[in-house]
Image 1: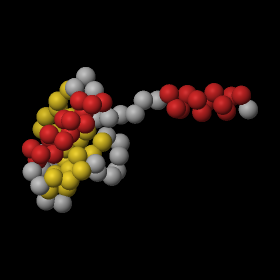
Image 2: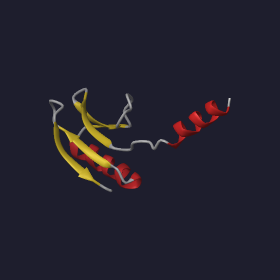
Image 3: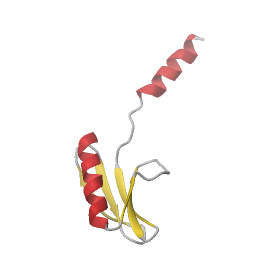
Length: 80
């Protein structure tokens, strides 16, 4: 019983990953947090999505990973 408690406590200690990805989404652009399936926000322009991702990443001291239309990584901005 004690072991179960300590194991569950360790799981809660894991930090969330807050890296923000700017990805193509249905002929538009989206911001999605790393590890999430759902998107955070949708934008018509990639530049608008990048600005939103920068705000989120700077808040959580994370990275912004910018993707091209084909899905490959174009750039990475570090807010550490």
